View 1 (cartoon, rainbow, N blue to C red):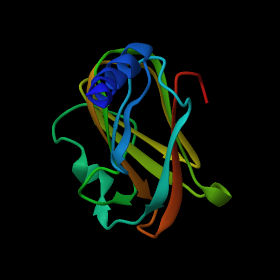
View 2 (cartoon, rainbow, N blue to C red):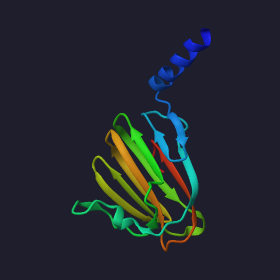
View 3 (cartoon, rainbow, N blue to C red):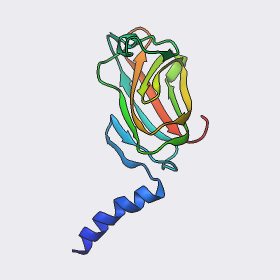
Length: 152
């Protein structure tokens, strides 16, 4: 019975402390609260796709940035923010200064970035964000996605 009490209170204490809830339950889902740890939280892997990221952007909706590159239908990462993040920096990098493409669909619109250090930073509203990482020419490429509450 004592173990049940610990199992019930530990997630509540982690939530109150602002620790990342369920540090990735799979490689593709993450929930963060302000003051999360570890900071930065990093997700890395390889990406290859044949679907144009521009096709994943909602039609007839304003978009911030140019969506280039290729990814897959399913988001690389689904990020849930139960509360507004006063500042959150999302940085995608790759080795050898190759170009990666970043598409983020969330409560405040669709944002696209590209480069060897594709970044999106600022105040993030509470809600669900779908994040795609794409390659410049549809080839296989390694990536490192870093989320931090400080500028990267």
